[in-house]
Length: 434
View 1: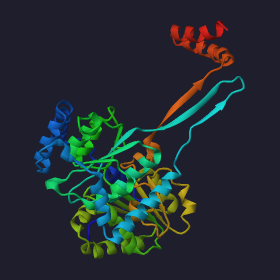
View 2 (view 1 turned 180 degrees about the vertical axis):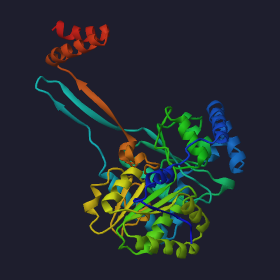
View 3 (view 1 turned 45 degrees about the horizontal axis):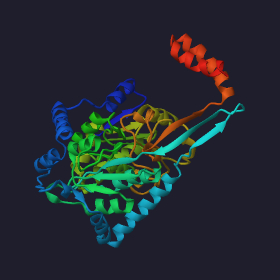
View 4 (view 1 turned 30 degrees about the horizontal axis):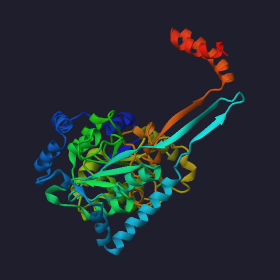
């Protein structure tokens, strides 16, 4: 048996135990911070020369000329053409569904005119250039390419630049094929904090971008945190999470595997099940112990469930929803009858999966909504990545002569109340001269 934590909301110490379960050490590793700070400084001051040096040091890849780090677009097209039919169709179908969903997120510019002729509005503009970080080498995350690149393209981003490491020259064909499907404009074979620095500050070879998106290791995450402000970033993601609310009527093997689907990410991932049915919780615990050994990443799953997982008995589904809002999970499965009647009780979640057949894994790859979601309770104030993250809003203000008199008097009173005389006179000049 995996010694996964068992809790009951009826226990007097439940809230304290829940707080302990949810706590996660977000402190920054000082060694990583020092290394990243140095890398960022060297790329900012030495540009391409630093990129070449770090590529030799970290990726064990000798590059004679800096131009060699850019892949011709034909290589991505060739990678796509070389895929077997089943893989290519899966990528293309996933891309189609993701694109269809995100096209519905597009915002339009708008304006309205007041009776005196004053016009107010909002202009929607796509970002000019976005950088997409994709893990490389043996790691294969084509779904990350789709989820980050497609909403950027739907938003109207003019140029999308992908960086992906190729340790010892090893390129991942699925990642390159996904880049071709998404219409990524340029691909550079660099990774790590140095790639983030190049995108944030620009070098002679790699242009500076407006925003950096995409997942990476601790060095990449630290680099993104440091360059925020010089460029935008998507989010600072913590370990992956899943919270399942089940009424006890779903196959316990299904629920166990859903918990595994997040636990297999890494030892810090969190998988929690809430149910009012103790017998069902026992059955899921049995399924966990019986099924875990069939999985290649069983050691990671075991560690994750032992350290951060939990099976929690609740009073009823109403209380389960209250606890879910306290947790604000990245992924929330409502594995219950008539899940629609419970969804309005959920205020905080990155994504909600309704019904017994809607496993979280479908959302990771092909359902359509974005799989880049807020973690570590940030769903209380954050949203999934979307088209809106690749657009900015500009206010439009055009005041008529009549409006200048009406608004100018209001502005003058408020400005003088704040002790800002020039503000007041600037407004008064317009209406006192008319």
